Image 1 (cartoon, rainbow, N blue to C red):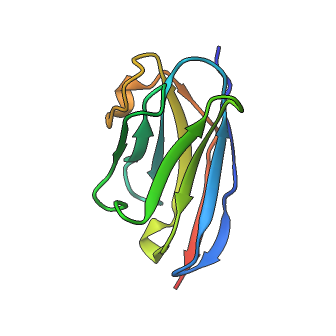
Image 2 (image 1 turned 90 degrees about the vertical axis):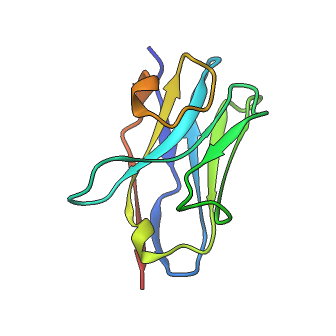
Length: 120
C-alpha cells in the first residue's frame, strides 16, 4: 500500500503563488487532481516516473508546473498567478502505469487532499 501525504495548501490572494508537495515512495506516475465544491474532480497535472514526461490541463498551462525529486520521494506542484477559480481541494495520486495520464481511473492510490483557497 502506497501512502501519499500532501502539504502546502492554504489561503492566498489572487495573483499569488503556492507550492504543493506530495511525499510518496515507489516507481509510479503521479498526478494532481482537484475538486471544487459542487463540481466533479478534474485533472490538473501529471508526471511520469522518471520525470521526463509531463502533462498539464489547459486551464493551468503556463501557470502551474509539476515536477518531482525521486531522491526525496517527493512530487511538487508550483502554482503561480493563482485565480479564484483555482480554489479547490487538491489531491495527489499515484499510478502503476508510470505514464502521466489525465484519467483518474489510471491512478491506484490517493492522498487525503489539501485545501487551496484563492481570494479575489
